[in-house]
Amino acid sequence: MILQLIDICYLVAVVLFILGIKLMSHPESARKGNSIALAGMILAIIASFFTPGLDNIALILIAIALGTVGGLYSAKTVQMTAMPQLVSFFNGMGGAAAALIGMVEYGDLPVDDTGKGAVLMASLIIGSVSFSGSMIAMGKLQGIIKDIRVNKILAFIVLGFSIALAVYVLNSGEPQPMLVYGLVFLALIYGLLFVYPIGGADMPVVISLLNSLTGVTAATTGLLYDNKVMLMGGILVGSAGLLLTLLMAKAMNRSVSNILFTSFGSASGASTSGEDGDQVAKEINTYDSAILLAYAKRVVVVPGYGLAVAQAQHAVHDLEKILEEKGVEVTYGIHPVAGRMPGHMNVLLAESDVSYDKLIEMDEMNEQLPNTDVVMVIGANDVVNPAANDDPSSPIYGMPILEVNRATNVIVIKRSMSSGYAGIQNALFFDPKTRMLFGDAKKVLNGLVSEVKNM
Image (cartoon, rainbow, N blue to C red; front, side, top):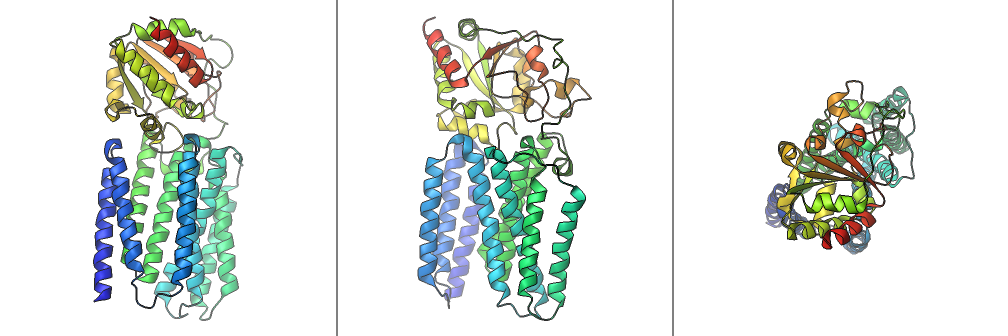
């Protein structure tokens, strides 16, 4: 009877997970979806405590308490610029947990149980890759780890050795704890070699893929314990992460294999015209920019990672409100891979209470841009670079972009003329319609608010 009630609770929890993920697909319902999914997880945890024969309950409660306090503190204190790093860290912890569970379970697993043994080996390898890969991704996002060229053949050799060890352990007929430790070590090394050469521009895709791998490890752990909620939850996370990976790759007009095994995201991309000094970018000051904005009918803001770095999300919302008081329509053009993780710009702007219905996705926004008086690009680079449409030799050629050069006027707020993650100069800077407004985004936006107020 107890087991049946636990299974019912698990079923309800899975339904809550599915409903939560569905609601998370839209910014307006994402908070509610997160709360519903959290309720499902709490239900699943409580139900698990009634499992017959459960030992070490006190230690489990202490671990849950420590994890809860650490997670809440991290989530409450993290800067928005560091949110992708935190997501990558949490994801890595999931992979590490699955790998540690596999190592503990190996000692209790009958050597003749080949089915569970294969699942356990998969959990060890994938969990270890997810952990070490996520830690490298976090370091690269934080800027403390640079892109390192890695021989891809060496990486595959390391992975091959770890798989070969797993096969040998499964067929040895006796416990091989030292070989299992070696297997985990090789999988950890492969995770490092896997993520090291991938550049910053591709990190949103890598984070999604690593998240999918962590979901797979949760599913394999669920198989080991015959735990239905871990199995279903892992399948949901794995499939959602894989789908998001494919969508991110599509948004960059590239295949997942191309992202993972080439160096587009590093700073080694080819240069575009304009980098050799044969073109001149035109500057504009704060006062003239304010005039353009205040007397426009329609303004579109295109946010990028530079907006997050400057913590200027509240300043841009203040400018939006001032402009709307003067009768200007203000919306935001959101590119799928702007920022450092999927949905980064949506989360950033939601923090400053920007209305969800003003966040317009790329395809819809591109239809509106020809009828836009002013586009204000804040810290975005590659996602507005017209070379993606016009220059077949460009490494980003074919990548869908926000076609801001179709608007009547473009103001680009940047600290300098530096290139984006693709390592190429932005042809938009030299477009006759474009004016560069140099400076820290937060200070510039505050200056624009003051100027527009006085008009």
